[in-house]
Length: 297
Image (cartoon, rainbow, N blue to C red; front, side):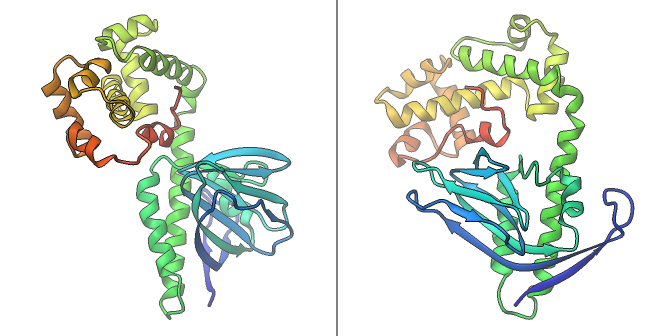
């Protein structure tokens, strides 16, 4: 059973007055690391993929594009693509096959196109919940058409919102993002030291107020919050891979007070350092960097 809907859009973000979309199928796949390359050519429908976790490669326009959790890729009908999972960290994704009277116009506000078929969603965790609901709504019930139409519209809104947010920071992207990269790299390399806002700004030849504004706009947190979050991520890695005591781990990430370290750790991770180690939590402690596209390690 297919779900058909029509968008009536005039002016604003869309150039066409009427855009229609037909939901063909919604599915999910947890790829085997040995899965062979998938080739897609001359398909009659478009296909939107949302990566839930893991990594993989999309070959579009003859060029390989490395993708990971939070990334989206759009396969346009009648275009040639090849894609496959990473052999050590295979991706999982939810995909939506659909057709439209003008897919290029529909996704133009997201800055997606056959020449640029990928983008990154910063709020991947909340969007994952939406995707799961979309997938679960796709069945043979009479409510499917209404449910899928609504979920597709919500996903399109999230794509457009992300694109607009990215465009709003382009004034920072030329100089500001270069500053942010330098500052984050400095923090990553010196997080074991007793850093302050004044110290970080001084070492990077920028005013504290300017640095704070850039972090709020581009990173979504203050430099000190970033520093403490990075320290906890480094501590998680050490708890999983070494036999250091909790005090030694705290000192190694730049925190002299073990009680303070444990308190901050539990606030961020929901468990104490000792419980985290005992549970042998299987996670990438730096995933928050990748979701914000600021992994400059």
